[in-house]
Image (cartoon, rainbow, N blue to C red; front, side, top):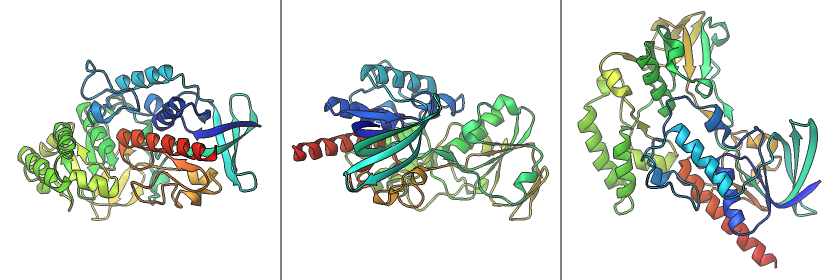
Length: 382
């Protein structure tokens, strides 16, 4: 049995940010991480061409802005290097290879009890703390829809988490399922490497450039978000023209207001729209009805054969599976039950960070709020 004031589950950007904030306030804590490194999703499970879609001024962790010499839009390797510097600077030492099996609140002792499997040494470990912070991220478990006949598909199926590079699919017929940022960028990568690429786009999309989003996020500090949305949407329409003829429709709300309402990000175009307009990437505006060997049958009765399917269909949080008293802060899907911006605080010293779908800026805001709340709670107990 080991005790600490705070237990943090997860050593991704959120867990690291919370650790740094607690360190600044001299609060003892332990980070439990199931992988063998920090920020494992960034290190192990992102495609090679990935870059941050938002400018660096919105993508830093507490107390350490990016230096002026760094590029405006960081590459994957740039950000991983930043994480390494951050960990060293704040002397963050996660307990790696600790897979949390259960966490529950002891009302008698007013403490959280967490049991982990030390996968490196093959033993069970128990921890107790006054405060527990869920920082395991919203991208914990790959989600692939349950499609009729998927198991019969004779080609390759892969989730975007495990997709690395388009060169692996040269000259193949590939279907990308999912039209968020990952799906659209993967489709572009595949096309550039000579794959015959199709992408499923079933919902309206805000499509915008990273430069316009950058300017919009600056403008919203001074102007109402709906006004900023009108400006950047107008400029985006000037660039792209009417995309409805290509199967891309605009949603009711603009990119920034939609992000605020739903947490859903706009599609930051990396060149995919141009490929679609040129006919190099085919848009399929229909759901999948069933799969028969290499043939995919769509709800509009169109049929096409593919050699591979890439599922850019997102992730699911699994915190509610190991957190026995998850109803103190989470819903049945493992996401905050309270609406933003009051999502981060639960009952009995339970917190969650990085689950608001607000990107790295949201991670920073959560970390600062959680650390301040814990600090004030400890002062009241003195």
